[in-house]
Length: 395
Image (cartoon, rainbow, N blue to C red; front, side):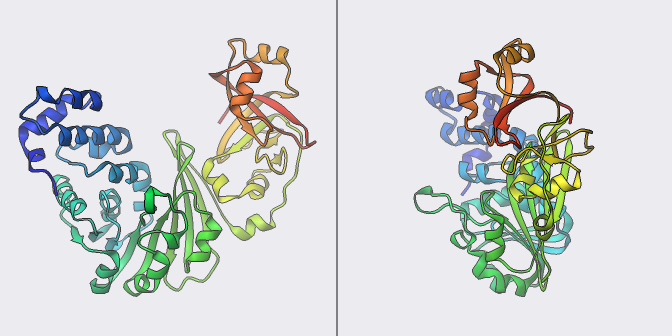
């Protein structure tokens, strides 16, 4: 339950006054604040520091209170919350793994009525408080397990699940059948209640593994934020039997980069190879996760440097490439004179892709420090020989 002291105005004021300070130092100075429940108040400060950039809309609302740290860490970001919300709409939805309530909050925007379902009573208490603090009146908090709720629930338009992926000893779990609730066993009941199911899985889950455990998958969404894969989503539709569409997206302050395809398209695509030409291309992380290695080259008329490098090249700049584009300044063997010419300050943005040496090893061997605005790619060329590419970002 929510500690009553956190609801007191003087405690809320203390949190605001100290929220930019180091939590560990505040704990050491607890004796200075005898009227304040310092441990609970510092936990709120820690949470606010975590959500400041992750969930700016929540951070801006000083009435919101945060549950234990794990729920805050596992909550979706604002970018991914908004992305998921755009995938579903209707009259009623149930978030069957409520947690901190972030996904419920975003998903409920496109529904007349929403259910937040959570088996942990303390999380339900925080959810009730926070939905009220945000003036959300159409979300109903239900303290129950997902399966029990479903058996008694009315007909729904959609359901959403983000199963717990932690096992005994805090072990990370990836297979869907190992997570709680086990969505693979719940599917028949889920489709009895709703025609659409949105499932969030571990970003590390193999997509083919996920498809083999599920049914009626209409779309698979691989979502990256600032070129780091954050979410893997399976959108299921009752009765759907066709091959799923894979949608990859990279969300960043500069905009949204997307690439979508069917697995059969990648299987039928043909790759062509070349030594480095005028431009270099690196697909974004979501596309790499989805595995469209041949198809992206085919669609943008690019050639691969090597079957295992997943770097591409062209003579003419390809517009709107789903990833990063570079103008090649040099390509060839490692040469200290060349390095001094292009990196006079001794700084480079180093990347190792299909190269015998890691970034750390390269940094040490080449005598370069991380930094600057020019890139050094250590990779393997079409000839099978390792080498370096020095480049400048153009997109």
